[in-house]
Image (cartoon, rainbow, N blue to C red; front, side):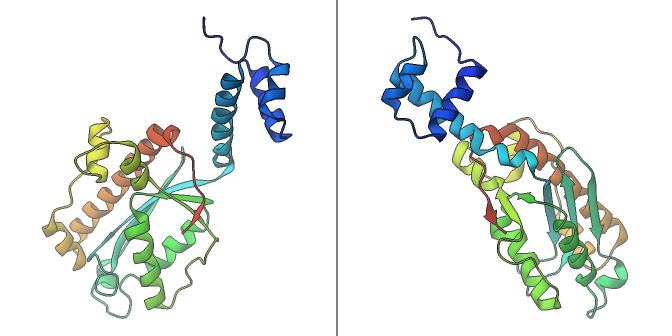
Length: 236
């Protein structure tokens, strides 16, 4: 039997019948040369596609941070980058004066990041669940800043999509993007990190550029792989 593509008219009717909870046995009455199994499969596929439609109305922001330590009660945030889907790139970086002042440190840039994230509807990270978001939240609590509460901002973590849908020797962002031919990932040597922590201007600039590149390739990775996942709406 030659496969007959589903028309837009048929797809719209399928969704309407599903919305009205019409049993599959009765749905075949509306379609010629379509089996109950094919109707069931097409309905399932359409419902999955429709489930992601909500993202089209969201202001999606990709973000990343660089820090002086992996633990927020020891280290501080050095810089952040936010890239809006098909839009502008924004960033902020600690200054030398802030870096060496124990009373200032990253308070200003933690505040500017929180304000920037509040402009988004959905934030997309790479392992932000395990690092970026807990780090920022902890720094905000330590510094006495207001961090968005539960259900104030939606979050989607690309790390878990990569882990679930690709078979890689490592699930790091660099490996995922290099495997898919997405160029732009740069290294951040420990020496640069150490100098940046002390407020070295060149090291901070390098770290900021590295962070910018990470959100740019994250956006491209998202565009490449989003078709494989149902977009979830978890709280940050």
